[in-house]
Amino acid sequence: MDNIWIVFVTVFLLCTVILYRNRLSLMLKSKRKNKLPLGTLGWPFIGETVEFVSCAYSDRPESFMDKRRRMYGKVFKSHIFGSPTIVSTDADVNKFILQSDAKVFVPSYPKSLTELMGESSILLINGSLQRRIHGLIGAFFKSQQLKAQITRDMQKYAQESMASWREDCPIYIQDETKKIAFHVLVKALISLDPGEEMELLKKHFQKFISGLMSLPIKLPGTKLYQSLQAKKTMVKLVKRIILAKRNSGICKVPEDVVDVLLSDVSEKLTDDLIADNIIDMMIPGEDSVPLLMTLATKYLSECPAALQQLTEENMKLKKLQDQDGESLSWTDYLSLPFTQTVISETLRMGNIIIGVMRKALKDVEIKGHLIPKGWCVFANFRSVHLDDKNYECPYQFNPWRWQDKDMSSCNFTPFGGGQRLCPGLDLARLEASIFLHHFVTQFRWHAEEDTIVNFPTVRMKKRMPVMVRRVES
Image 1: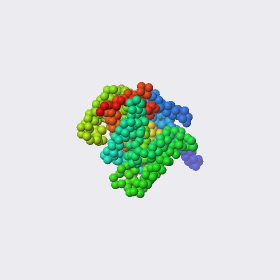
Image 2: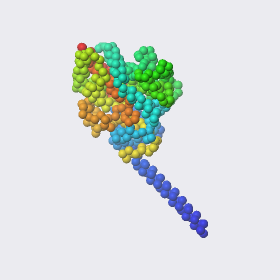
Image 3: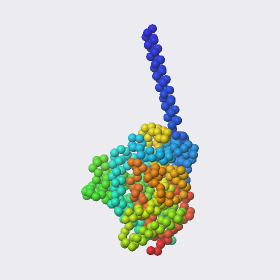
Image 4: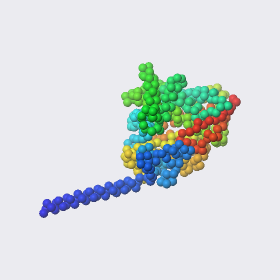
């Protein structure tokens, strides 16, 4: 009898424990589900990727976000690029994501992009190695030595380009700025001057960059395969330069980024890693910086008052230069207050970097929203920059708004933030300042009307042709 009683009690306790655990599990799942942001995961497999991409390349790329913000709020769930994703258009949530370390979030990008960048890319690596490389490059990009070199090169290449401009032919601003910025950046990265090697590098680089957002299929003939082959060719060229520098002795005073990385004693900075990252760092010279200059030209074309004030400010600087007879320094360009407000407003409206994607390594709760472990999170900067609660009349180009506005606010993140803040942000401003100075002091222009889109696309579909008239000295 006692044995039967013991068995009965044991079974009862086991059943109670199992029922309790099941109930607790259901409660936790329900609680977890309730904390997930509202939204939809869209179609099986493809999710909402098609609509996301089609909106991104339209005249209103923010329409995907705006539609869902109205329906679900500033933070919502979706499914893009093959992964369930929490999308944030909230400045505070974005700040948390940007400032979190690699124990919480790691970079996450579409498969084609990760294939091309490689596992050793600074965009993808984490921890001490990422901090080391980012720190070395960031310190060099902030150095007065490099800013002086960038200024000399930018002045030289801008003047050479503008000297060939004719009044009876349209000037394609995006094409011209791509040539200028690419030459300047490659010189800073590997000390390569214009010539046959530069043209060969640029040819292969354009093939490489064309596959960044392609389908993740590596079969011969596909866009991704062609891009990977182009990168292999570029890696060989950069590795030859690295080997030549090693054989000739490492410079005590670095002349370029390769010198900076070679001077590090860490054995982790292999020639392959350095070459891969040098190529990745060429992207701003082909894409981001030229787009900044092109969009600035577009917005100034549409805002005569801003163009007039910018021109007057830069003409004053040019007259001072003519009187002194000395070349302008990088501090001269960056000290032009209204020019900097024009660049800030261009960055806000143009949104050259529309956002960043991360992957959660554990469940994360921010402002009552759950980001589940394994899900991606997309911190969207564009929606924050175009939110009428953050900026009055956000679709209006208004450089004057920056004359008394705090640029350190989490409402303004054109270069990202946190440990992965773009190290070249100061150089981008400097190059844009130099280009605008030489452009407005030498030319008057008008844009071809049919080339002005209603609102800037993620990447300019048109090359911004303008008709120029040279100003008498």
